[in-house]
Image (cartoon, rainbow, N blue to C red; front, side, top):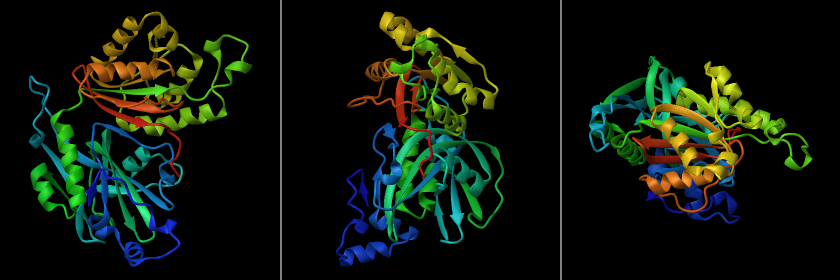
Amino acid sequence: MRNNGTMAKNPARNDKHTTADKAARELHETDKDDRAELFLTGRHQEIPLHPGREFAKTTLAAGAVLWRGTLSREANGEANADAVEVACIHRPHYDDWSLAKGKADPGESLVATAVREIKEETGYDIRLGKLLGKTIYPVKDTTKVVYYFTGEVTGGEFAANSEVDEIRWLPIEEAKELLTYDLDRQVLEKAQKRFRLPATSRILYVRHGRAHDREKWSGDDNLRPLDKKGRRQSEMLVPLLAPFHPERIYSAVPDRCQTTVAPLADELGLDVTVDPLYGDDAWVDNQVACKEAFMSVVKQDGVSVICSQGHIMPDMIAWLSDTGRLPIEGDIAVKKGGVWVLSFNGEDLTGADYIPSALPVR
C-alpha cells in the first residue's frame, strides 16, 4: 500500500497483458490492502470535476467514518478524540469489519452516494463533515475510487440486513484493532486527526450557477437570470448541500445568486438573507467590510450557506487561508455551481474541501 503517491495507470490501458496485469484483474474487494493507494494527506481536499474519468474503467464509491459523542474544545481549540465512538460494520458476504461505504448510483453526486449508502447499510441519518480524501485500488478489471467523509450520526436505528449484519460502536483505538483492513485503519486515523481540531462552524461557500451570457444581456446585470444548466445546478445543489444540515442561507444581490440557493431554501424551510457585502461589487469597493460580513457568519457557529460570485470568492478564500491554520497552494478554483466546504475552529480556517460540481458523477 502506498500513501499519497501517484497511481499507476490502469492495466486496462495496456495492450500487452503481463503476469502482474493478470494478477491485478483477479483482485477482489478483500484484496484491497495489496494494491491500494491512499490520498488522505492534508486538510485541503478536492473532488475532481469528472472523477469517473480518472481511469480507463472507474468504479466510484463514497462512505464515511460514522461517529457519535461530544467533541468538547479546550482553551487551545483542540478536543479529545477519545471521547467519541466510531462505527465498524460487519459484512457477512466478506466476513470482514470495515467502514461503511458503497457505489455511486446514476444521477447522484458523491455526497449523495455517501449519505444514501450509510442509510441503506446502517439505517442511520448523518450530518456530513470533513472530506478526508480518497482511496484507490484495483478490483477485477476496474479501478475503484472511494471518497470518505466524516459523518455524525443524528438519528435512525440499525437493523441487520443482507449487507451489514452487525455494527459495533467503539473508541477509536479499539476500532482500529477490530477493522480488517489497514486501508480502513488509515482512513480512521485521518478522521481521528480531524476530530482533535473540531469544526465549530462550516461555511458552504457556493458560486452561483451558470447564467445567460453577459454580452447578450441588455438589462440590469443584477437581474441576469440562470440559464437552463444553471437552473439544473441549483436543483442538484439541494442533495449536495442538505446533508451538511445548513441552518442559515445568505446570498449576494444578483438574481443568479439568489435563484441558485432558492431550491435549497424551499427544501429546508429557510429564508435567504440578501446582503451586497457577499458580492463582487462590494469587494471592489470595500474589502474590509466584506471580510467582516463573512466572519460575522463564521462567528455564529453551526453550518451556513453563502452564495457568492467569481471575483470575491477566490480572494476571500486566499485571505482566510493566509490568516488561518490552512495554507492553500496554487490557484483557487471557483467553478459556477461549485462549492467550497470551509471548516473553522473558532475564527481559524482549519479545513477546505472543494466540490466543483453538484451534477451527477455518473
